[in-house]
Length: 426
Picture (cartoon, helix red, strand yellow):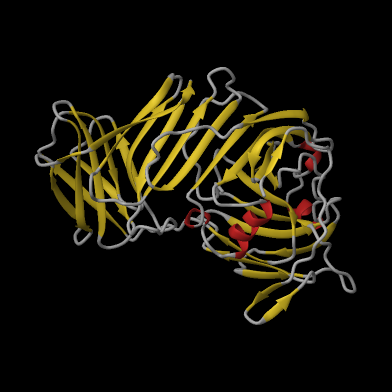
């Protein structure tokens, strides 16, 4: 059952049962943890390490994942892993602004099991140059393949767009001055480098307005999947809205009538009375008829890394916090910690010596709390169920749940709006 929390105790990282899991006719107990990375790291990202800790932060096992697809971790000789422990993944991102980010993702209260990291796949087979003719007067455009989305105010005479595969389809949406929103669906793109597109003939897009809670800033994006039911292998962006600093209680979507039966809808809104509070939501499958916020609250009682405590209300599956540190040097650090709704306080895992040697600026004492998040996944019964679905099933989470929604409290500053997250948004 999901937890409904009103006042949460300071320390609640307890568990009683052990894990026995059957895989390929082999039984693994508390003496084994495996990590497999299925298309997880993007270009420019490098896997560094997996390490396991007990709930007091003491190191149990570690393994380098640099250049590795699969690793096994075992406890010290003559011992077993505890019933519940902490798993931490470390990797580096591409350089930006002269620095690279070292990411740490810790999952509290997990059991020994075989984990598979699976995320959104990418494709970039070719590039097509779309040469437009018959362009009607318009004030906005959107051009999308499964691999790339290009949008702006006035459509240029040609656009180069990346293709997921050869051939690929391309969706074009125009906000025309005379006839409103019109679209054109291109098929078989990529058989040649240049692809002529006559926009004098287009189809009318459907229009739907859905209510949302009052917001002071909002961003939304509507996408479509082909084929239906597969949410990890690209989508076509059909429409979007980016309204920072704008109040609204509804949004209007534009989309084709018959091309898609399976959609991806994302929306991010800011509380008009408290800019520290942000909501976001993903829907997979049908377009929602309305948006309602995840009901809950977050109060930070202590923001220091060694005394962190929060109090929450609401019904949700996962409690998370994000911590940042940006010292002088080649690296900045981001540590995300996730646990059950009872994990309102925790001990940061002690860092392996090899990690400290390679990244001397990394230490938990210097971290600053950035945000706290509660997140609910539709169709997930508990945090333990979520861990099984996310890591032991080998499936992309958006192929498992029809919706997830979150409330984020930005402790270090107010939020002015975000666009949808990248591949590691779950």
